[in-house]
Length: 115
Image (cartoon, rainbow, N blue to C red; front, side, top):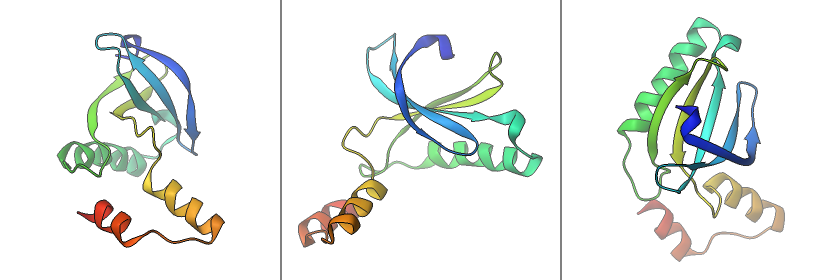
């Protein structure tokens, strides 16, 4: 439930929702909470959102952000996905940073990412 979390700040926004950095009251840990505006979605998009939850819940790898839980917030009519917070950024951010700088990943970095 959303009341179990305190919103710290917005991490990003997309066409269907917002991702927040949150703190869970029960353990004091930080997480990324994605709120998907279900009313704004078509039926197909709703099915895709639920499939995303199933897929995220089934993936376990040290280099993939870990799914923690999901729930539906009645007040905002949003599907809420709670994920591990990647405080060092994600792979897309690192790729974008290298592209901006005109640099490449080192071989060691590539091996670390894919293994």
